[in-house]
Structure formats: C-alpha cells, structure tokens
Length: 207
Image (cartoon, rainbow, N blue to C red; front, side, top):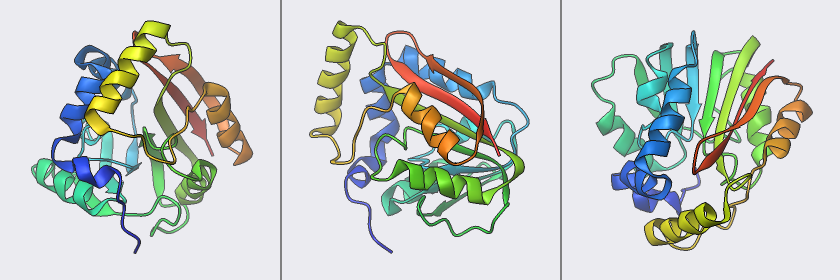
C-alpha cells in the first residue's frame, strides 16, 4: 500500500500542534459539537490522526473503528487509545476502504476532505460502507466567514507548526461540502459553520 508522507511527520505531537494552530478554546468548542452527536452505533472514523476526536466519538458509539492512511498516525493512535475497549485502530485508505457494503451506522470525518486530492471519491466510499439510513458526519476547518485578523493568525500558526501546506490542501466551503454530499445521493440534514475565532464546516447527511 502507498505510504502517506506529509502528515506522518507530525504523529507524535499532532494534537498539540492542532491545539496551537486552532487555539485550545476553539478546539474545545469543536470537540463539544462532536460530543453532542448521539446514538452513533457502529462507527467508522476516517483520518483519525492520533485519536483526538476518537476519544469523544466513542462515548456515543457502540463500537468505533478509527482509521488513518498514515502508519505513524495509526501507531500513535493505537498507543493513545489502548485503554479504550470499544475502539479498534487500523490503517485504511479512504478512497478504497477494506470494508463491505452497508457495514456501518455512522461514518465520521474531521479535517480530511480539505487535505485529500479527490474528496468526492472519499464521500462515495462513505456512502458505500454506510447502511441504509446511515449517517455521515463531516467537519473541516475553513477560512469561510473568518475575520481578516483571525485568518492571518491561523496562517501564521499553521506555517509555524506545519510549514508549507500539503499540495492537496484547499479551502472547503459549506457550499462545496453540501454539493459533495448531494452528488453522492446523501440527504443533507444539517449544514452550518461552527466556531468563534476559527471556523469549521459542519455537515450531516443520511443515506
């Protein structure tokens, strides 16, 4: 399997870097929004990183399969989440998932669609592995509706924490995200921007 290069470098302190870039208060806000998602049942997480969102998701999931394409992130997540009996961490390619059709009640993605080369293909794979009536939950940081000063702060912190952005990075707007889901026959149940100084797209769709 192909090896992820860009994000793997940051596996050991990925959460700390994100907290610095976004700010601890805003990260707490975003995590609280995820914590409010109830009755997730059998859940698949794509792009789990080193497990920041996994620890919140599992509170409302019967079982969580947390996946990432980076070997280093998978190893870091396994170490950080080893005490969580309801979480299995494994490597998976979001464009070609190793799961059968209609396997999951919920698929969750945080900050993935805006950093991968073909986000709509990933959404199509989510549709495939979701059960009929299953739920896709997506959140991704965005510049949309951010104030000028906060954009400058975000860019400065990002460059300091991560250096030059991934070649696949894009600004995912709410409209783009809604269109991706609609193109794959999801019924969009909720779509909004969340956050205070920093913003994120938050969208939920049903199969």
